[in-house]
Image (tube, rainbow, N blue to C red):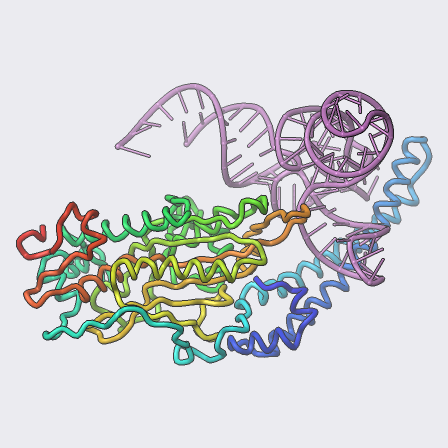
Length: 429
RNA sequence: GGAGAGUUGGCAGAGUGGUAAUGCACCGGACUCGAAAUCCGGCGAACCCGUUAGUUCGGGCGCGCAGGUUCAAAUCCUGUACUCUCCUCCA
């Protein structure tokens, strides 16, 4: 959630920033009108409340002295009624204001290219060399099905489209991938966490998936209480700090978790219908940081490097792009996407997204810290995938495939595979 | 699933209708060569609005959360979340 004071003090700047995210200026004007209205009402009701408090004191005094206070009490009945009606108006204005405020995306940082969508994203750097085999690379789903380590057909029967069974060496490879990632992040100073996979509405609001993106997730009712299957571990990891006032000396807080991620993929019908790229359920290793207000951009660079490190150790070619204002996620002020090379698709595909949310989520989730002067301040939050496991497995299958249909195991994963160096038809189970 | 108890500053802990004690911690001062101890004073429930050169000053709100009753609610009423204890069940 944006800071209303910041918008109030810099209305033109706020309009320009939000216009870069397709928010019409009129919406900001409406918000400012409501804010003005709200503060006027607040002054009125608070003046009456002050009066009520003073008179109540004198009523108490008179009662103690056994004096008559009927006149004051009668006056206060009217004041009480006035307060009630002003408060009702105030609540109405507040609700309208919040309705807009909680649906406004974060301001894009000055370093972010301004543009409407992914076409205006900008490549920052490239790493690795794109393999030029002497044979035509196969798609990972063909490799997986031919080796018998991925089964999409049976998953479709049991669950539906966009689900998969990993079998044998497939399951083992996925497990190797996430264990490797978690071990790396542990070495980089992240605390490993196993979070809840079902969260309440408040948590979904805290990281700002709600109220705007309710249709993208699966929500189950448990005795009338809605609980949502996490679309990313960012939700329970960031909300781990919700409502806390952290000692500034403890910052930055760094946590990481493997979790399944559940997404309904509403609106993506027809896209990536084959393979591991777009699933309703996929594993992801997530990194989350809570920082002070000064160091969040430095920490974003470090977190992106942590994600890149995984791809480099796996020796997978990738590039880093900075998302333009129109393509970045709702709560982010700046996002780097890491896209890995998929030879059969002949293009880069996203495997990680690292974002600095500034105090946008912290304001909603009330994540604060005490600085060296003892002052409480809103923290900054960051999140990044490190990495999406299914897509990483897809990239390994495609980049490490051999002409005979076998797949070589990346060196760093061999210890995680019990010494196996290659998946073949013979050892696949 | 059943029964009971609880939730108040950073921590401990009083407060059963009159507007949040007290202690520890913390900050300042005195004493001291210095420290500890002691004494004196202060801050602190964390956010909103107004005001200001300001980190100033004034006010509101604030006792798990949300409502209600009342001139006035930590206190009374209703609902609800969570924690603990016991019973029951369970990987």
